[in-house]
Length: 344
Image (cartoon, rainbow, N blue to C red; front, side, top):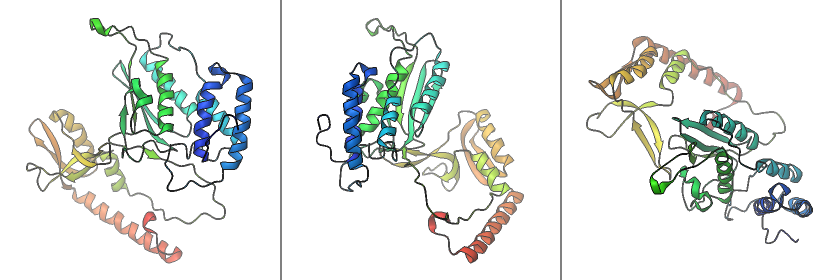
């Protein structure tokens, strides 16, 4: 082999192929003949390594599940599609228009990955990778989410090679719609938008989602029971939050409304929601009370929302729905056997 040396796994092969494609593809200024020879070698080695399992003791580089299940030809097409853009794309688009362009490009370029793209005000764009089929962080880093400085993605510590490659490609595409006429020496800043990159969020850590493999034979039976009206109303009223106890003298013995937060290395925190005014808190209180939750604001003009209890009617409905669920589950287990803990 001329182009592929020291290949010890399918992940190594994919990583090396991407590097060669970036350097030698005709769209990147390379030679068609060279790229054809690279593809030929890649297909031969792909056939050798495609069925070799990953050793549990080997170091992960993020390419272990890179477009898992694809053939050699399909993989090369994925790579071509991923790096197909070129040139400056800014033609006076607003940040709102650019956000839609980015979303459509990500869906087309990374159909198996999930990104969060949002605009903050008029001058900031946030792009966050939420799920993909590869490990985004090295074992040594211990990260479950992180922010990325888009000026130094290539040197960002704690990322696997595949994560660094994806975020670099995203950064390059997004910045192709930007302009920067700033002059920091004179404290003059003029740019189309400011870019913030990330992998995972403090409220929603990054997740590895492997491709689903087709199952042969009949599917295992699963227990399903419709969600009760009271439980559904409470879930919708809480949205992404919940009530829980906090270590605070002021709220000792009471549950308050808040949400789960995660540190960059997996530390878990329950963070109470602090409202700056009674008016802003009242919107949430109205939703909670409509769902049958009795609550009140801890301060005269702001503070936390404290859980008091449920209305008698809601308590009755919750008990009834729980009873119906347990009866349905017992009946299902008599017919199909006990549920495993993951299905309960």
